[in-house]
Image 1 (cartoon, rainbow, N blue to C red):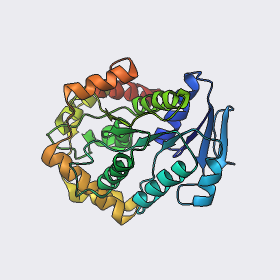
Image 2 (image 1 turned 60 degrees about the vertical axis):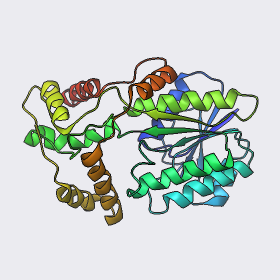
Image 3 (image 1 turned 180 degrees about the horizontal axis):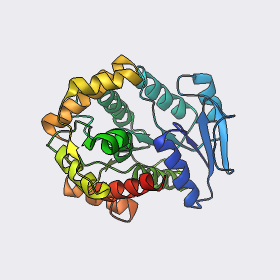
Length: 294
């Protein structure tokens, strides 16, 4: 049994590999990366060169693979890469796939990367593919990038608004993916499609996040407000213009509607993890302790 992990060096891919290693499942782990010589994987992980935009390299990486973790990159051609990967995996005889989609993908139709992921979900449904769709909310770990404004200016600067977001810890995403990958890998044949919303137990608002960081850092933290122009300008300093605008559109929807999970969705994730999902408060306090120790 062999599992191929795409997006293997990113925040989520590294968590998937780590959780697979902890499960002692007996499966072989293969990691797709553009630069195997620079990747730092555990000894039991086989690094293979390639990416989702290279069909030949993907076909080679999928040789003898029975289960695939598919994370399409946040790229201008994300939809094309994901749909191609689904087709290549099907042609290769992969019996199970775990696909990383997004929470509220169907509802946020004007946000490009949300609609891309939901379009892939439509393919999965129409073609009756053996896929577990994971729909994560906003990652708590995104807020690690708030270190500078939090510590220097006393500001929580992510303009998430006041409707609330059921943020999820990246470690919970990795564990949920690993559990589903192993379940599908161990099965005697393809299993029916499933969908899991990956969400946290609390709806976090801008003011709420600031209050939690005030406690965690033991200093007053203010919410920086809902300025989307400022957000887009900051993002354009470190990335492409299209991506900055995409993130602006996502935050705009968060401000207008929020992204709050139902109790049933949280309960379903708890059943998959066999424990409650991590809270934003726990994440903030743990992160604050790590910052203080450096």
